[in-house]
Image (cartoon, rainbow, N blue to C red; front, side):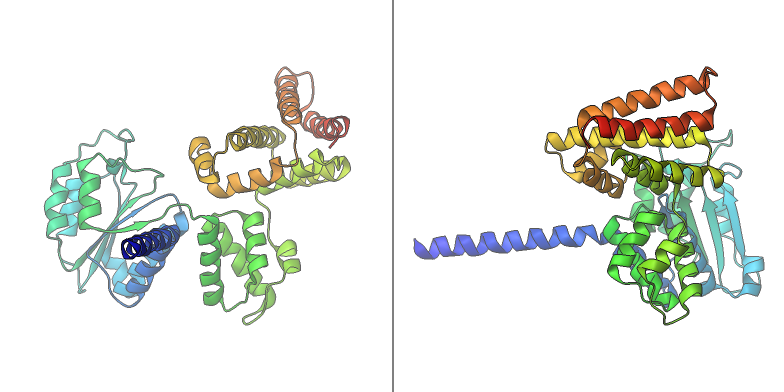
Length: 377
């Protein structure tokens, strides 16, 4: 009996360890898949067909760039790289091109942009595509051709036969939004390539300021490299000085200042945004959206939803939900509701011509500060 109990405990522990390990691995699957594919391509291991899908433009462009540079010289690229938009060209014509031998080269590359056939989106044009022409090619692609099919969309239609075929026969690269942890790991990779040292707290601040868009982050890291030089360390002060805040981050900071009763600082930030040519009505819309996110996150937290569940329900990036969750702990529900009502009143005053937009948004920000003071922030 004791031995049976011992075996049960041992087996349960092994299962728990395995599941726990798998859950940890799962968090890095997307990042590792992307990095792994890049490293394979850089080693010359280029597959005949790639299916790249997702909204991260940087990943899409980097994968295409690496395939091009690993496969063809610049001179060869001029004659042997064909780019097509699915809305402009029948799929069967693209397949015919992929089946055509390269011109004075051992390899050619065919790139298909905006492959909406793998999504639930309606056709972008009246062109009739013979979708059935793709399957035979996927099963037996021309060895001299690398076909890159790009679907820059957030979601695929998994029910479609063409989606299943691509996932079965092509090398799939997900260009989806990275999580906060994946983004920080990506920053580490890019910092190594640029030859700069970015400490972990600085990486996190970089994400806070520039967001999780990889194109923007790469631009900011390049800026940091020019500032510190190769081999230099990027300090927190350098990031604060060099990195341009996204509109979302500026709005986040503005609300934080106003809701803490730091009205003068909030108004100063607003005027800086206007000087940067940010549209006051857009700022008001972003402020209102952020306040609504806070209210939704507060309500969902009260129901004990996890950050992942909240991100799915609200259709937001998990990092946005995480930041909102930290902020709402210091707010009261009635303050958020009063602030949203004040934003609606401001919007109405502007659109009915009762107040000039720049001045009206400034008054709203002042009112946010007044609400926080009157309700005991």
